[in-house]
Image 1: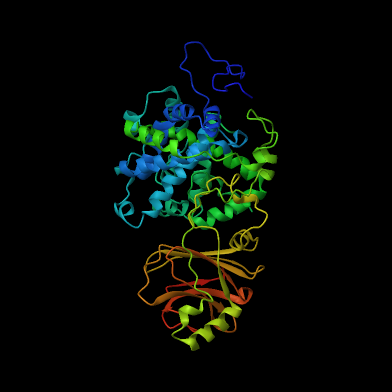
Image 2: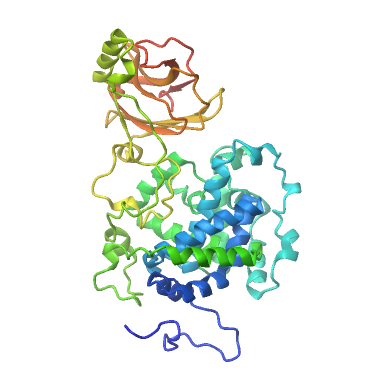
Length: 202
Length: 282
């Protein structure tokens, strides 16, 4: 129990020499739960661009995005000991938390600014290609884009409006002139396809 | 249950409204298939962050790392404590989901929305004692209590959250009732209202969101449309975001409505309803 799990390389996962060390986020979370601020800093560094990028896509306003991220990371720190690897990866756990906070933010503010600016997909970087500049040219990102390409365009459209737009499936249906019930099916089918293409979580 | 099962994807991307989310989370507690699906779909959503990468400012980093110095991490959930070593990859999948929870409601940051119900508060009707008596009579038939689950609360993980509480709140029981009927309307005056009706439990949950501010000296009054007696008072509320449980002769109701009434409420509606719900064909 006293072995520092972060430096414990006997975890059975071989690391190829020279490859950039991908920290085990689950272990960093667990260490954070014990009050290890350095571990949390590593966790932050390993995830902040994805977390911030996700929140920014949903919230749009950079200042509010920072607030959402600040709250979310604090919540991650506070509840880190409660992360249970049996229920999914650390990254998915963190994303779920951040996404929910981002969505709560835009929905609670929705009466005011954001919904007043007419949403039009052409005005928004929902096409994954258009964000390419901002995307790290990482292998992982390319894999995800390839996987996203396996979705039908209508699945991707519904999924992006829901996930990055923060809209409910009912709202998505209405925006896309779909019968209620169709959007949720597209969202689910799109996610299943993405999951299967990436070979995660199955 | 097929219908609710189909919400798994929308749930995984937070694309459910509050009512649907509550219903689905109840469903999750008893459907291991959906639990597994949601878990796997969330892994897929985590991938989407790859295509959204944006570097935050260095300032944010220092703020966050400064913040955590002042906050004590919560202990593990009680069920995580016994004998479950930190390296546990030990096939507790479903077992944990079923048995892990919890009673840590004290710890969650659930922000309760102000669901205000002026039910039997006499002080509110001091100026109109007749109204009060009528009102109290109405309450015998339809007592409104404040539900304890917060609208838009921050419980993001049903498996770790309140899912296995031994005692479900009254609202939760209605939302999870097999015969629950949900009717939702956007109000012309703004905001939205949803009723979830369970005739078997003889209860109704009214959830409102973003209702416009009330004029001074008025309240929202909820009504049950009784098949025989017409509109029967069912409770008062003042908050724009509220969730209340209506107990009354729900089983005999064919609909429900909300009106704006003078403070203290009315025995019969005195204004046009801001929303009407029909339970027929719902």
